[in-house]
Image (tube, rainbow over all chains, first blue to last red):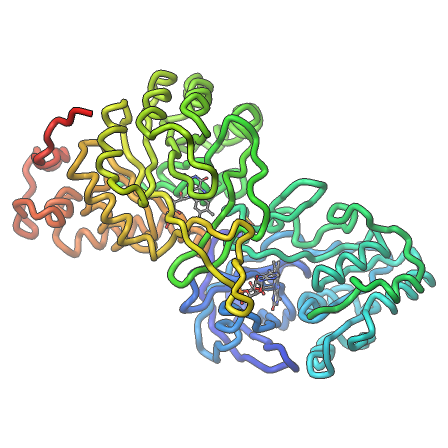
Length: 252
Length: 309
Ligand SMILES: Cc1cc2nc3c(=O)[nH]c(=O)nc-3n(C[C@H](O)[C@H](O)[C@H](O)COP(=O)(O)OP(=O)(O)OC[C@H]3O[C@@H](n4cnc5c(N)ncnc54)[C@H](O)[C@@H]3O)c2cc1C
Ligand SMILES: Cc1cc2nc3c(=O)[nH]c(=O)nc-3n(C[C@H](O)[C@H](O)[C@H](O)COP(=O)(O)O)c2cc1C
Ligand code: FES
């Protein structure tokens, strides 16, 4: 783990539907594995914010940002030439040897999937969005199947799991979506979220219940096997049930 | 020489040994007599000019700490202080008695000031007295900046046998979600640290340095060498880094270099010069040659009356 934050220059910020793709010079930074994250801090912020690596073009690090608060808005407003302090890669990425991986993203949960899709040689991908405007981001994952609210991304996932139960969902999205994925497949890997102050185990701010106790997500995750996060996972919902489960929504 | 420590609870040496080794002293997160899971999330939030935390003293408890953590920290070869907390004077004494047996521990910090848990029932001075009876190790009393008269508590701690002061802990604060106006932290309020604490910590250090002869570890919003020098000028002998480590894990090295440069730039031959300046004592000419006494860091005479408590 790198423990030195590096000041990097912004190359460009681009609108991708409702999100912003922040493209930063890579400098000496290792892009790490898909699902790992970086702590990003810009002028005006006291604390850095955790961001998954979205794209890893040569010489560049790309972060897809949903501006929901002060930190993400500040990062999304950066312009070419601005400085951003980057620490990482941090945490554990998705397993790259999962059996028949299927990528599942909800809203801004798409963020780690472009890099993951590229690394795994474009496995099937299911993406759910709140609106057509948000769904523009699906262009970052070629060949993905896209659903828009009120259709839930867990509906096509349930069908896919009926056809090939051994498929391993690698998922990132809002908590209700992760829980719904966990109920369909206890062997799924979920990229979880928590507010983080440091990203490297120093503050104990990011704890979530893992294996029944509060553990630091930045060190244990952010990708965690579903069975470690949710008690009632793999409860073998029938596809019909999955379709009607209210909490299987995509809120983002 | 001013030593750079981490503030308790702001670094896990076992997660990042190289960061712990970059400090002159590693201070553990507060350890309590029994294990504590800590508060429910959400535990942290950025505030206007600082951050809030409500970790709630999550720790494995003194027995598991000594059994599982201490040997691994010892293996890192860092100078080690252990921060101790409790909910009664006996709780503090119990932990101190256990730690007393471990030669690897240089000093014990008594956290009598966490804003995120119920305050100990006993006064700081009785906690220090109980801890004093339980260990011969140097004891640093870590005080809250919210005390109505911090100098009275500092003097009481000194009288009860403290060897130093750690100033300061966090102040209670609240952050509301800007949309819903609900508290962001699960506990509603939390401890405010970072830049907002800087002038508060300076005032506490300044007052306690005049009221007591104890060495002071200054902390509160230190981000640069200038901030560290200000604390030294106010009366701190050593400086601890907390919140800044979250954004910059390599801050210790940087602050050390900057502190040195900041002192030199003012022509200070020793940190005593900075202290004299801030306290309005006879200030030497810039760059004046330093006499042998000054080199040995003798503090100027201060008008400290012996206090009866
Ligand atoms: C490992 C990891 C990777 C991430 N990757 C990305 C990414 O690639 N792109 C992206 O846009 N975001 C990502 N996030 C989420 C992002 O870090 C948060 O949205 C951001 O920190 C919020 O900061 P803010 O100051 O903008 O909002 P704040 O003002 O702090 O919060 C705004 C609102 O969102 C809530 N909130 C804050 N942080 C979180 C959180 N982590 N999870 C859920 N709710 C939260 C707050 O309670 C508040 O209601 C990631 C989070 C983690 C832990
Ligand atoms: C996340 C976090 C956890 C903390 N945990 C402890 C603790 O366990 N014990 C303690 O004495 N102080 C604790 N503190 C307080 C710090 O040690 C320090 O006194 C305070 O943060 C002021 O310094 P700073 O502004 O440089 O952070 C904690 C502070 C933070 C931000
Ligand atoms: S973010 Fe600080 S411990 Fe995980």
